[in-house]
Length: 497
Image 1: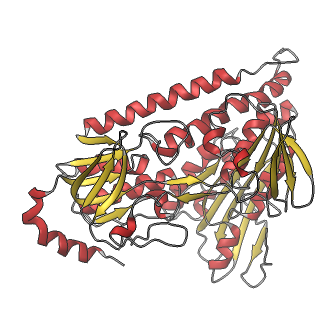
Image 2: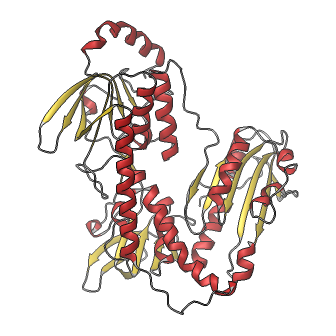
């Protein structure tokens, strides 16, 4: 594997020939990570920075994409807009108990929201382009491929191929949604298409149990659709804290989503009434839309990595060292194409560290400790640090678990039967807070502040000595005084949820 010392030596050897390169840095992929790396590299002294990206389109393919990447165009941003729209449905129901006299039927205009969403991603696409231009980054529209250790070939829309030389190359092409290999899989859609459907489905089937599956189940159900969610394990959101997974499952079911645990789809067939879905238990149902939310794969197949011997793993993820350097010293990779921690803010961090290391004269590694993240289900789940299961697995001693489950004030008036659940995982010996979780309204907004505390090494005693904001849900994090349970590594039962 490459290492930074080797890179520094090689760079020193080629300094005299630097003027022969077209660019100091050429970035393949203009998503959040790539744009951050290009801009910051220019700020840190890269005099000539080039970048290529596929033409803009809300639905990606091997030949279309857009500046801003998945998050801005067909991921986080449009998803959150739809989550906002979907949340108004249940909120309007709750509003009646707060004195609002509303009609029995409140119509929802999907096409209006869809247009608002499209307008926003087009606006953001333009902002990203202007940020690049203001940083003197030269943007080329086309598909980028590795042509050599210091060469990138850009295939333009008309098929013209132009090769550019660069002292450093950064790959930031992200990932793409995958479809399961079942008969009729072409009848299903991925999250790309789900964010741009012409009509709101009345009957939706979702296969999967991760972020995308749970979020779209909430979106479509909030907008009035019948939603059936199929997943292979007993609970959704594998990898999260088991207790919080159960809370999310209970909330989804409470909001009217039909849950199908330990079940997968085996075939899709087009009929006059819609898409006939068959499960591995022999069940059949008809849907207007079938969403495959079965994971994403690193977008590396068309990069021509084999031309220079860049190492990849079995999933196609580019192997990198702790400074994001590949097995070829002049070539780096960040973001989802490396399949480390696939979150937009993480790609931004990796892009910043790359720029500081290669052009800023600082050796800075990405720090993956205490990264907060959220699932924008309705209500949302947000976490930072270790889950209870992870803490027990890594602990040398006893773990103290503090939990709080309560009906938020808003729900006590509206009558909605849906509890907020909070959790702190603490090292019993050191009193250090190892992890925090919350499922309930405003969880992501609250968890961002908790993440700062954990990053600073906060103890449970410091949480306890902090004055809460009243009345708020957030104050529960500083008023959980009683231990719910103490668990040692030897007493923890193994689960397979």
